[in-house]
Image (cartoon, rainbow, N blue to C red; front, top):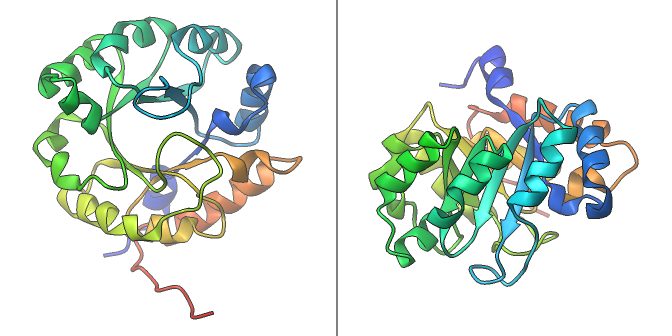
Length: 241
């Protein structure tokens, strides 16, 4: 059944990705999107190994925390050794620590132990899958996590096009865990957020769409309205061109 409007509004989170900000003025841009109505700040941490790009690490997060003391830091770790960075990010002030199940498996990590270590460091637990990874890779651990992240682009670079075929994963996760926060990341904007929300995604990462214009309140408001309207509603097929 479709979610009630109030329930939808309470569950939607719009998360500007600071990868799309002016990184020389990240604190200023973070404050600007928070003032414009952003719910969380999405921080893309890339190690140049798990993904072919290098961004920033815990020292930058720690500095940003001083300028945005009340913000929710949604940290997406695109790193080969997710267990290695848990304590650093907890100490830096991260609120959500989302690791890739592909990286944890490749590193030989004990996934339940890793989830517990994240909690022990004072953070919520997020688990991500790349577009080519089936959600079955996550299924054994859904009771251990606070959020599942379904990548809707190949991780590593911003500005890519949204992959609507990933919505089958979102719908499957929503049916398995109705209460779970489900995040989508990659190519999201007001033009397609309704597709993601109607599939069951309630946490929306938007980088380019948020920072492209002069006033981030406009895209944030538009995306929120569309997501609230679509969340929990039956999916509607896109109109033919």
